Length: 290
Image (cartoon, rainbow, N blue to C red):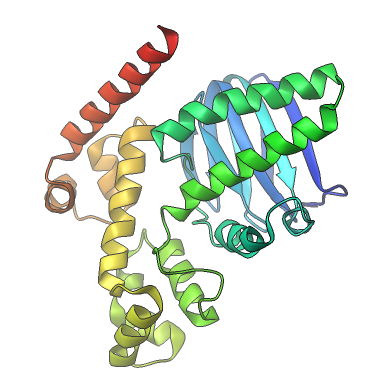
């Protein structure tokens, strides 16, 4: 499989593609993909997500991905390396945290912008970067770099919503490996049971529970519940999948099982949550255009 390299700190690509796609490939760098307009499918590590305008994806090094354009799509790509993160463009105290968050992103398909306010913020940032990139005006490079840095920080903030609050760049490697294992296997309930995880890491179930809580400040079961709930919320708000399709994808026995699980966590049904979320999006768009 082809692996693409990047020979500069960051690169901006703005292109429109008409009903074609790109075969599966891997990167040796980070890539942010923002959909300005159009529809299609984004595939990351053999998981597929329908995209539309306003969606943003993060492709991390060694993720296998491709996309299939269904209607003419205008793409914005921001490619950058971990060398750029460490190059002094960010505050010293933030470098470790940013690198940690980006490296420990849940490598699953779907829009990474979970915060509605950030979704409204990203579009004008992307438009400003494209404008500066095309016009090449005075102080152009400096302004583009500041906008790029802002975009990376916004993305990191949204990714951090999937990580336990107490987990940071100093957390032990095995604890981080456990989190990545759970994220990568969240679609397979049998693989994230205590006995399966303890077997994977070669430790007893009793020690697993104590170790996980010590390093994440929550039980493994709490983390799995919170993570699954956030994934359901993302699917409800940012995809057109039916409830039964979401249930099947996330390993619930049926739609009723997912409904019961979600209502217990959020106090409302998935259908009500989706309807309220769509109302919120429409209201924000109305206020922006007023």
